[in-house]
Image (tube, rainbow, N blue to C red; front, side, top):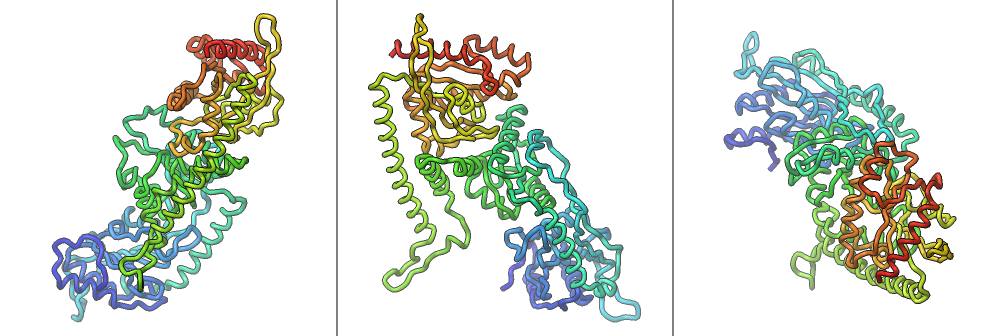
Length: 581
């Protein structure tokens, strides 16, 4: 029995059978519809007193029948047989409408979201009428034919502009609506000619977009709840845009919504999901990034309705870590974090997780592919955890050797992109990789540094370690996986907390770093706050920082300003830390 979709309440069994019989209709391959099929659809719609939609493929077969408007009965993008910015879906919709008016925006938007070959709207009389001279009863008053047309240009908003994360106007898809016509004129329309010409235009437009576009084209979605202030929300979106840029994506646009709480199924509201899908389709986006962690069911629901891949903030951070890890330890820890993130998200992966099946000797449902993959990932996680533990032991022996030689150690901590690697290079002439990016370096780097010590200014050798940058709401899987790096923080005699004073959210960054340090299993040593990039900060910010943190040191690591003062303050910090042990 063929399935009928939409609002079926109150329908009689005879009416359901009439709807089911539509599946047995066949339309000529080169025609959009026929007068007979249109009148039959209109007659059923008149009897049930509701709009009815029939979806037809290019072979002329009815593949879906729905009771309701095109918006209410639309096919989810993931279920469409062919879907992409460079072509149409291969399906057309014949829809009835109870009012004598052209297709409304909701119906046209549904056409755009599904990339339908065409949308035909049949305005019905409601009661039927007898043709002049007698004969069959007719139900269609007039018909409209609508189809998409390629846009002449699409504005590409590249990643640097994404720092202004403002709510921008959605580009409306372009479509064409015919004047009202009768069924005979509609039947004369050549479907093949229409579709071939349209797809040729879409293909040319798609190729033009793809030139020099080897990066993901990203749409960022942000949700502001009552728990977040507008300033924090904008900072979060700006940081997410930086993360996407660091990961190698191009941010085309940002969509925002304000809700009292997160929608449990789709994070944002149903209307906003439609807006996201339409914007993604209009701009040719191939990745949607949300500003918060998503549950597996939320990802599944969103991908089903939007039609493209959806990821959350944690997945973007993991992708950056996978690109940046250089040492064996770093790669192990990244893989461990990725597997721990992936494991609970295996459920609901669709047909790829179908059952392997049972048989002789294995009666019953059999083992699922899901269970097999989950067990394999669990085994891999166990092996990686053992290797990370061995690396921990090795690092511990190195630290004990340093402590036995009584060499004080200092760890550089701070928000990502605060300039820790630049400062390490400036102090020790190291050659650690630096870049104006988030998480430019991941692996801990330790270098020797000679500082003046005591009242006689004798030289003392210390070890200074550059650690991975912290970030607001650091994913728990990364906290667990990067134990080796974070242990350098807990085992150090003292900390240098570096702050990017040129960043608008520098106070929030300080709080985020302190929150992460407070979660350490071992309380870290005393910390000295260092404000970096003072050459890029304005006078008001400098004055506020001096007032709030009177004991801090103010430097510019890139310009080598204030480094001598830092060395003397570092010597006093080490002296205090060693004496207090």
